[in-house]
Image 1 (cartoon, one colour):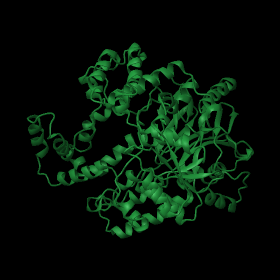
Image 2: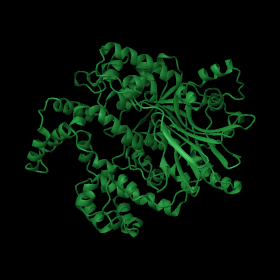
Image 3: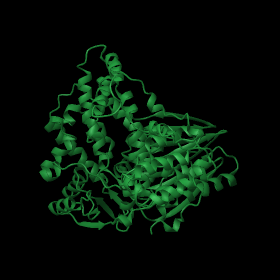
Image 4: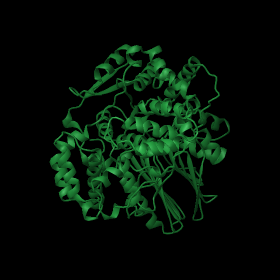
Amino acid sequence: MCGIAGLAGDSNPDRSRTAVAAMTCALARRGPDAEGVEQWPGVTLGHRRLSIFDLSDAGRQPMLLPDRSVGVVFNGAIYNFLELRRELESAGHIFCSRTDTEVLLHGYVHWGIDGLINRLRGMFAIGLWDQTRNKLFLIRDRLGVKPLVYSVRDGKLAFASTVRALKDGGFASELDCDALAEFLEFGFVTDDRTIYQGVEKLRAGEVLEWSNGTATKRLYWDLPSIDATSHITFEDAVDRTEEIFLEAVKLRLEADVPIGALLSGGIDSSLVCWAIAKLGGNIRTFTVGTPNDPADESADAIATAHQLGVPHQLIELSPDDAPGMDDLVNAYGEPFACYSALGMLSVSQAVRRHATVLLTGDGGDDIFLGYPEHKHFWMAQRLANSLPPGSATAWKLLRQALPRNGTLRRAKHFIDYATGGVGAVARVHNGLPLYREHGLLGGRLTGADVSHRKVPLSRDSARQLVSEFLKYDRRTRFTGEYMTKVDGGTMYYALEARSPFLDHVLWEYAGTLPVELRLRNGQLKAVLRELARRHIGERVSCGAKRGFSIPVQRWLAGRWGSDFKSAISESVLAGEEYIRPDRVLELWANTARTGTVPLQLWYIYVLEHWFRLEQSHRLPSPELVLQ
């Protein structure tokens, strides 16, 4: 787990080294153990290292073949690297380190870029330079676990792990108003955009090839479609899931540093810890408790740890331990208002004192259908397939006669889904309409909109709503919010997060399972619940989904209210005509008295602090990484 950067196409080596050094400096917290820069004519690669495999200098990056014909910088972990190494050694390749990074070099030479990528099982963002062919390859893992951003201008390509690093290198300056609108809509910027003009995110499962000033991209992987004709039994699906899952956990237990596992009271993390125990892994589990908080799961987690017989440590956090706004805006290169990110930062800071690698349960809900909306969309899909022709037109006319708000609101949305598909789902989100309703946006954002609200309404989409939504969700919330939250929160404290549920082999299998099987008898993530029932018990398998987060809307109305008013009264966003501070403060005053405020005010608060950081541009000292 590291930070990577590079520049290709600049003939001035001193200027290139300066730019790449600035980018790697901005990535210091991602890799506090070592740094390195290597150059070829017209190409510079830079790296910040968090040592996980082979802690010696042999594992330093950029890593080069002895003749310097190929060089690589790499962020992530290749979990099957030992298997690939054995295959390469049997073919005559000689290794100089015990790292997964070196497998990328020899694998590229032996199999070529496509042959290498198709064999990798892990999370990765890779920059690989082939001096002989004068080609630079950028590769992002299949599910977008690790970030990779780039900018192509005037025949030059710059890349880095974060948008802020590219900005430090001088490759980003002007804000993108469409991206700002996305943030205000969702609380994050999707992979369609970055917060700066001229900077792009490499998408999950994409490879970019740059040569002689030209960049081309292609998708090398996509999730297989649901097999609606499958006759697999539920029991067989659970058995096969268990087999793949155990293999995924086993692969993630390799490291030359202390490994821990996060244990909440929920199904997914409990299954990870069960698998570790079954595999004989001697790994300490951690539970972050919040005493007297209704969401505290420590009692359930302690009971699970005792039942599994795994070493366990409870780390208690009080409300005063919650990270502040400075931590939030420093940890994420773009404005990011996922309130559970504050919880992720707290967890990462606490665990980093005891471990360098942390196994988590992230991803189980997304592929095994564990969110309430999955069930709602499945029910709407079933209704869509029973509606007669012309029902969508009839509903559109009837809907106009119904009240906008009130008790029928949820029922209206449900029929919207059944007649309009993903287009209706995208429109229901209460983002930009609230800003417009209360006149919160300044002149530069008055006409702002997001493309997601323009997804066409479609009866065909409604008839296959679950699969359509899962594709849409992976392009937006999954990579833009969920993967970003974990990567930014853990890497801020130089902690490598690994999730067996983000194993692409597991996703390829589960993704083909019929929806009816994954939601057997209307039960969310029925396959994983059955696994938990078999191996842990009813207490865990029947538990409700919970999460560790911070009540930002209540805190903004109370404990953070004074700072909010001060920040908006002296708003730099207002000075740039992005918001109207008087209307923002008016909405806060009208809602704070109820004890909570709209989530959109939290988004503005985060954006204000992020914008101030970008203007002052005082990054935290690398020496503070592990404090």
